[in-house]
Length: 372
Image 1 (tube, rainbow, N blue to C red):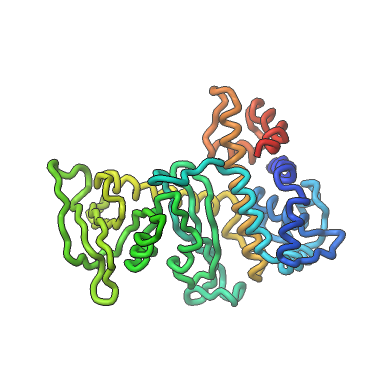
Image 2 (cartoon, rainbow, N blue to C red):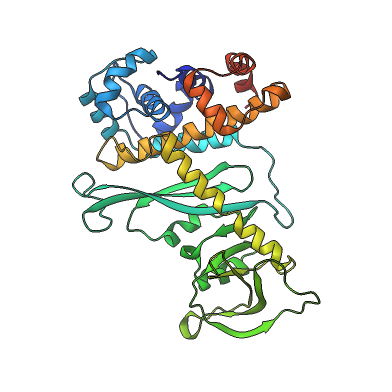
């Protein structure tokens, strides 16, 4: 069944063409096309993500039905190859700024979580020769930070599949949040830099199982540990050249299979159970990656150049931000009996079977765009 095309109409209200022009000037890109402009490409990539088109050839057959200017697949491919992907990255940042909550904690100790991780999109090596990954595979990475409990996309950057996650971490940091990350981000010297900054970066990061604890001191506790907590101590991390300068707190727990989970943090006033709960929130980014891959065509890369690949991926993430915003604003606007989960909203929006209250809400989304 054909998906609703109303999302494109809403997108044009939220990011009209004139909002794109300053970015084009900043990137020194001159759009000489008249028949198929950069903005047309933007709308095409948005619709392709939402409707999960198979590629440029498939989109060529469908775009006219969505009210878009019809061009052949070779024109689509050439345009996607030519337009710098940094444009779509800036548009994503713009959408995040428009749709995410306006108020953030600036002073004091942060309470919200910034969950950071990466996902790799792989294809055959022959398609992306500039991005070798493993063996006969090529791949690119999206390094993502989301706001825990909110599901809000906060920051994104890109690398090829071989680049380590740690290299992208500085681009995702935000001292207004508690950083939550897995073992790929557990470098001891980096912890020292977090601790020594004027505005400290608080964190809960998993360590590798073979991490050395130097000068460990168990923290005093009157009651026995609850749940899966096994130890709570402070120490320097590593040894020799990799020894941290500062002492950090380490909480050790067991996963359901009995394997150790070692967490390092500079949150010394939290209970060990609280530290464990913070780390368990990390599963939310795995859910996010699974959702965008299943619903926004992320694994199907249309082009073969960095501009085409990253332009497609950033536009798909922009559509996620817009859908999330429409869902949250709609749930606040409709009667309690008409409230939906995000999964149901996406499914019903896709099938054009949203309840009447939701259709009325989307028809008046121009009012919402004046708010954001």
